[in-house]
Length: 316
Image (cartoon, rainbow, N blue to C red; front, side, top):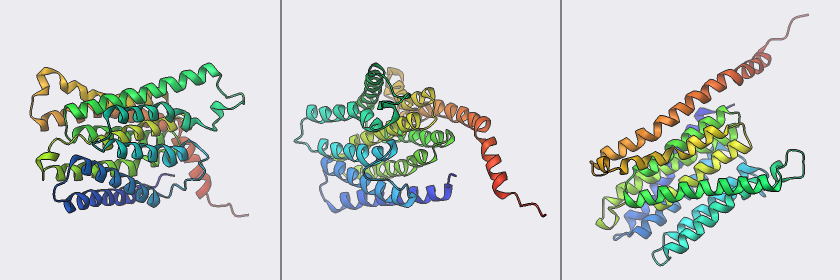
């Protein structure tokens, strides 16, 4: 069963660790650069996730035995490593994006490794189905990652990272309601870490003109990959529907609506607020539909289990 108090503790611990690392590292360096800020964010995200998942006790296996294990022990560390490398100024942008797109293309295969979909069982896919699924999923991840990174460079600020955190939270709740509690629980430390890192980086960016235009490439990268991984695991290893997964994954792209001429030059706080509202609308629709499905399919089953557990034995 879900444990809300434990999830809140994990989120609090992850947020505190991430924020303290970013604040301490940037404060300790008198003339912090964007490279140093990115490095601080990467380190804050990494350690925050370690602490958060330690509190929530997901009990990951090594070597990984399922999609969630591979997501948290392989995919997320690879993403953090790539964003660390990409943050250095002497690394060409082409090289950074080559690494990112290569990872996006391989993540679906990593997550499905050893699953029934790629096996010889009756439930296994044909070569055509496998190739189609891997290409489509990889292209979706690459497209969302590229578009949101481009927008964060074009219009820097905290609204893009926060607009990614909203669907991550929605993904966690939806995956839990779809019956995969452990998979959904993985979303909460990730959300807390990204939000805390974003806010701390924003506070530090106000201290220096060199950091004024916060684009947060590491936060966007880890956030998009984290969102995709949670939805992928919930779809192929849980009971999350394809429709719900696609709506949640594509919701952050609604931030591009604010780039139309009538909105682009409005006040930053107004543009940022509008982005969050636009992203939140389809997510609320998905949550309402998922709650309806849960009440119809899962709630009666849980009620029977609880009734059988707490029923007193009859006296003879």
